[in-house]
Each structure stands twice: as C-alpha cells, then as structure tokens.
Length: 195
Image 1 (cartoon, rainbow, N blue to C red):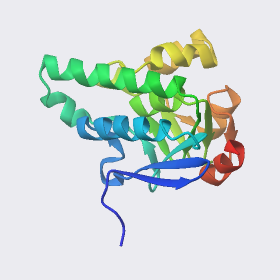
Image 2 (cartoon, helix red, strand yellow):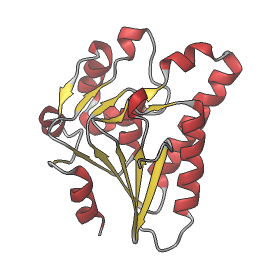
Image 3 (cartoon, rainbow, N blue to C red):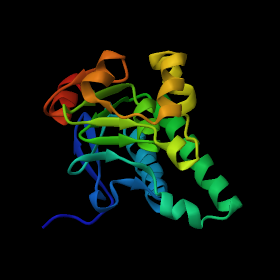
Image 4 (cartoon, one colour):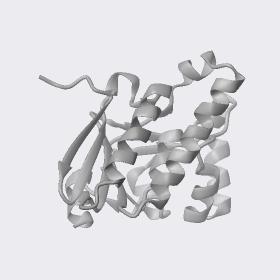
C-alpha cells in the first residue's frame, strides 16, 4: 500500500532520498509541506554519517512550486512568513555540508526550479521540463531563483527565461548549463554521483 505522506524519506547510508509525494497537486509546496520539508532537512543534515541528500518527485512531477490556490488565500503577513520560510530553507539547502542533488523526474516549475537551483547538482530525466511561469500569472518567484539562475546560465538567458515563461526540455536545459546531466533514471544516477 502506498504512503499518503506528502514527503517520503528513505535512508541508504551514506545517502538519504527525499521524495515529494503529492502528485495529485503536482507536488506543490504548500505551507504545510514547506514546514515539513524544513523539519526533514534539519533532521537529516544533523546525522553525521549522511553525506548526500537526493530530492526527487513521484510520477511525472519533480516540483511545481508554491500552491497558487493556497497563496491566493494568504493575507499579507502569512504570505510574507511563507516566502521567508522558503527563502531560509532554500538557503540552508544551498549551504549544508552534504552534497545535494535534485533528481528531476518530470515537471520542474517556478518555485520547484528555485528549489533545484539551490541544490549542488541537477540531474534530469529525458522527459523533464523546466519553466518559470510566473510572468503569465503576474507574479515573480520569491525563493532565490532570480539570483541563482543568472549565476548559472548567465544574466541575459535568465531574463529571457523569466519574462517569456517558456518551457525548456531536458536537453535544452543541459545545453545551457541548467542541469548537469540527463539520464533515464535520475535517482539511480544521483546515487552513483553521491558516493
């Protein structure tokens, strides 16, 4: 029987595999999921013999970013807390002592892409797609993508990516340096890289 937990953790020392398990919401990062992820990352990074964290998603979605329906219901103060929590968490992931790998199994959108950018390594399945669709929604990402993406793929490409909200295939993402590898099994590849 499959677990209904929003995030699954499997420890295969010296690595932990963290799986986003909300495919029915396209693995969106709700307030509760972000809080749970924060707790999981804190616990795992405190374990001395875990040297790698691999993040992946269920079915054909890595992460779709913030839950837009939920965002609409937040008042100013709650939205600010949510944004700041995401910023702090992604900054933590960017600086933990463990190697962090985004094993991108499918759609990687908006805040989900910000999350992947905070990881040390990004490995994509051939079917993965990448986009920052905020321009179409009249919003901009608040979790560090506007800073990390230009450093990775250069400023002009990043600006074009943000303002057009265009989707990139896995190979396009690889060709511009957004991902480090394309592999049929991103988790399997990530396990090899993390050893």
